[in-house]
Image (cartoon, rainbow, N blue to C red; front, top):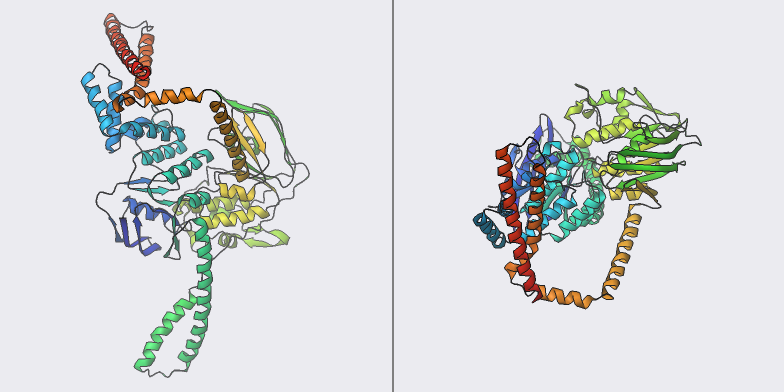
Length: 626
């Protein structure tokens, strides 16, 4: 079933033509990734599909009644709403039913409202939905539902926007870099979620493992043309290589034909026949095809590295903690030449803090960081490039000099360097604030590398970089002779360039794991399997028959009682929390007599509700035992 049809859309910004005459469709259950170089209009295409902006020409037609959710790179949400209010602000009917039920729980004295809310939960089968949406929030580390959006970090806002999009269960989900701001555990959960949910997806992502495991079709925008591939990332790579080879053969044939036709054109007299005029028209078409060479640039990063001495960096009993959150505890480590360390761990475990301490951007609470005399850091942070008003791309590089030293005593100009970073001469004179997010990151990476570091520290370097640039960066880092430390959630990237990992477990636990990310994942999975097998064996030997009997009795309950039984303990717990809060309010010495009387009445109502719920719980428990 077709959900969306795109017909001949085009988008330009001034003289810059991003794309034109693009057409494609999206069908139900397709999981499509759009691949293109930075600056070629990927985000503009997503904005057009979502309705956030319109095309200059062409149109987008949706099937009637299609519900669409759009996850932007920088989500726009009301800063005054709480996390819970943001979720419930949706038009989703089931969410409205759940909200009414939650409200009824907080007002147990309104029995009619509670009964209606309870019946609506049954009617819309909202019990399972409620469990699922709370699980989504938990997996994305959004447990505090009362915090206001304005107090969240950028990463938390992106995760909240993702949770909101998933919970709404749209017919079509459009995603712009969904794995940015997710830690590795969250990304793997999201892969599994998309694998089991029948959702139609259209996304832009640079995460190649995510592409491999989630998408069943890839559309590449290359040279203004769209190329569809009916398969995952591996299939795309294979078929793209075949396409490029075929284009190379056709280009060679076109050049030979062009030379032949050029000779004929030069020999023709000025008077043309109708037949020759037709051939002349064909000649111009051949000329255009022959000159349409592929622009397969490569970033040649042969920057001259500062010499590295025998002493690198020593960390001696480093400790660091924030209030209620220990990061490092007596951490010791000595780096050796050519070491390549990947750093992984959940968000908030201190990875960026650790990098700052090593680079001298932060201080440990205790311990020493001893840095060798020859060490020169290149530190790529998540903050990105500082944009000066009115600064052009070429000016950013010239701040480091007009000429850049290369290996073997050679040098290149700032202009030539930018060309190697895929900024052509015209692009070099664009204002920096006009660049796409990925182009700014590429320029920032360039400014780090041209300073000839011998110890590279990269904090999430893959965010917003296109796959072409990622492949080139990987090639450079594989040949980089200095030391390297990387924090990244891009598992494909980590697998290629690191030799061992620092695993931040939280609570100041840091493990040194010998291997790349896939090695680590396989090791962790084997531990989970071993633990599960032990638990199953233990259960098998300790009275599984009794458990079976209990389950069989529970299954005899009518459906409504089963639902009520599953909910009633939570309702009692909420009432108990309200009771504790009310009792604590009595300690306020400024309460007036009327306020004390009102509070006493409220407390009595809560106690009555608890007694009623508890009595009902015993009734259902008796049914279980009968």
